Length: 80
Picture 1 (tube, helix red, strand yellow):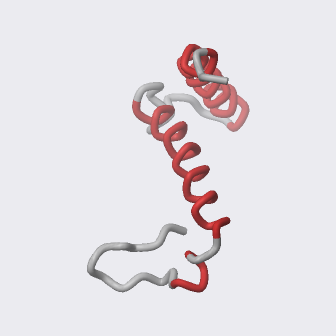
Picture 2: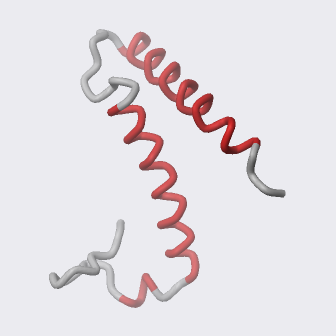
């Protein structure tokens, strides 16, 4: 859960956010949410056109593989 840093009160207080693990968790969460956002918008998985758990699972796996292929050049070019 992310802390609300706007003018409203947040249910996540300083006891949680003061730890370094919370910041790491938020960075990883952003990376995961970007993948799901791409799959929903670009890969057209916001509303599936298939029926059945197997077919929907296959379509999601296919979309996730496509996302990985899109990311591959950037990952290869990463500085070492």
